[in-house]
Amino acid sequence: LKQVHLFAGLSDDDIQELASVVKRRAFRSGEVIFHRDDPGQVLYVIKEGKVKICLISPDGQEISLVVLGKGECFGELSLLDGLGRSADVIALERVECYTLQRSDFHSSIMRNPKIAIQVLEVLSKRLRNTDQQVEDLIFLDVYGRVAKKLLELAGTHGVQQPGGGTLIDMRLTQSELASMVGASRESVNKVLGYFTDKGFISTDKHRVTVHKLNDLKRRIY
Ligand code: CMP
Image 1 (tube, rainbow, N blue to C red):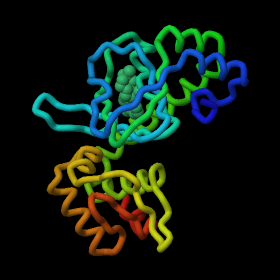
Image 2 (image 1 turned 135 degrees about the vertical axis):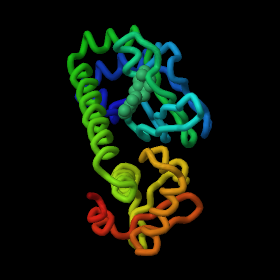
Image 3 (image 1 turned 120 degrees about the vertical axis):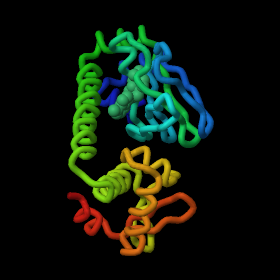
Image 4 (image 1 turned 135 degrees about the horizontal axis):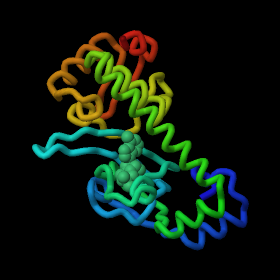
């Protein structure tokens, strides 16, 4: 629990107290952890694995808002505003979480202002990212949006490869990427083909490796 951003700065006693109320839950790859509009009573903190936060339109189109990994939390919005879940959350691989009930979350915040500050920090970061996404949707073309998303994923989920390049450590299909950048699969296919031809990236079994970060950066305008 000490390694979780949300609980950074808590004393050993506080961590002990928290440990006595958190539970553990595991989810299979592909399992829906909850749906948008479900009532929310629990905060999740990722111990292991990755989840996708997404919105699905009535005709089944998916917008992927963000992929969260180890140490990050989700489900805080419903606990704070009392409304239903704001998005679907799906496990992208086997996921283990710590869960905290609403009443324990609230009493932890009341007892530890540090937790409240960390929650505000998480919300601020998410709001900034959302602003950025809106800006990108309006001002960048699909080449720019794909380049930017690949760089972002290489930064957050990247693993340096011994032979050079940064492997994005998650299954990334063209449809998946399309739902992240708000574009059709066909146009993402075209962009990935172009980046591959230029040697900026390579793809293998739905995994993308970025070879030329600077060239990709230059493609963002
Ligand atoms: P909640 O609304 O309870 O359930 C869905 C969760 O997804 C939400 O809490 C947040 O934890 C998370 N979430 C929703 N929108 C975003 C976003 N734009 N960026 C990061 N996380 C989000």
